[in-house]
Length: 131
Image 1 (cartoon, rainbow, N blue to C red):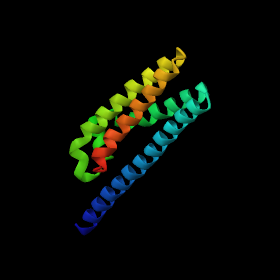
Image 2: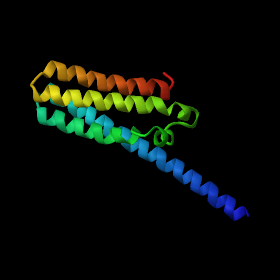
Image 3: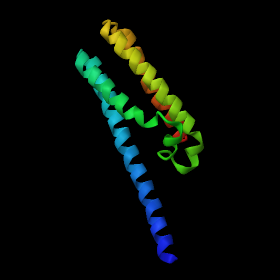
Image 4: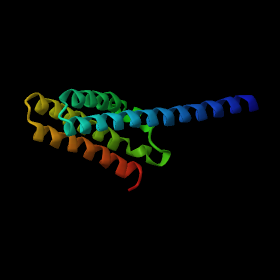
């Protein structure tokens, strides 16, 4: 019986550690995408902007499911997984708008969409981190 409890506890700890590792990797990818978009604007490099948006969209997919998002949030914040889900939807919308504006060479509008992406990230972090 003790062995079963030990195995169950090990499995739970392992899953929790993998979730933490996944979230850290995901946030790193998101940050890299945001950085590339910003550099693209600063250096007038639309290809870098598009690549950054692609990175953001890929990383953002982790939060496309409310229930799946729960496991990546701190235990005391898991009941707020809808906030991560809503932020992900805002990021999807703003990144699509950014690409549309970029393709039309409406750089100011594209920059505003980038700000919307950052605002969505910040709104989620404010809740999750308790800012």
